[in-house]
Length: 219
Image 1: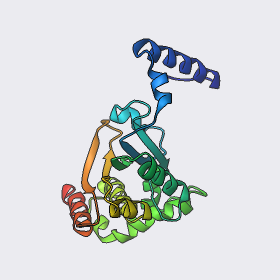
Image 2: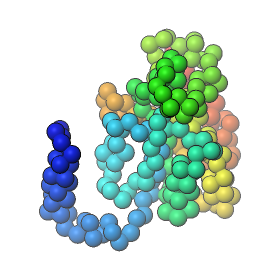
Image 3: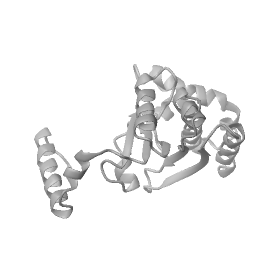
Image 4: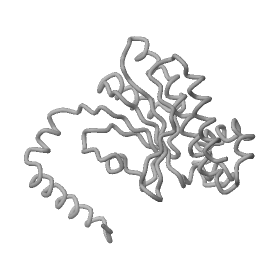
């Protein structure tokens, strides 16, 4: 549905709300009463990657944080506060870090493209690129962008795992799983990168296996 003016958004909103009320009477009343999502989505700000629609979840079923290139770093109090609220207050059971193929931030990191102020943020993705420089160099140039998108997700999952929020949650025995996924703009499908963590045991082994899996899939 295209929009020609900002006023169209209000028209679409009212049509959507009316349709929801017709199809599911009481939906908004129930939504107001509580927020108990099982899932948190840490994804890219890209407008083509909407968490609810991709996963088929309703409003209220997934707690979302998005930023350029789905980065999680210990100095970003915005992201960490959102994760802390999701884990400690909402008690989500699954936290997914979700990248996407065709990510402009990852491409900028891969090819040293200047984009402006965001260059400082993309520096975190360049760190991932540099850490895996030899692996990326051995890949067909046509596949390097996809590979870095996947490696970036894996690294961000590890970053989430080592936050004080996750360390404290696991220490007290809270059941919360971390997952790394990558979404395909071309087909609408989520690719499981096979890194799922539910505690501190075996993180290094799972990390290495996930990285090896990314490279093996492109050879």
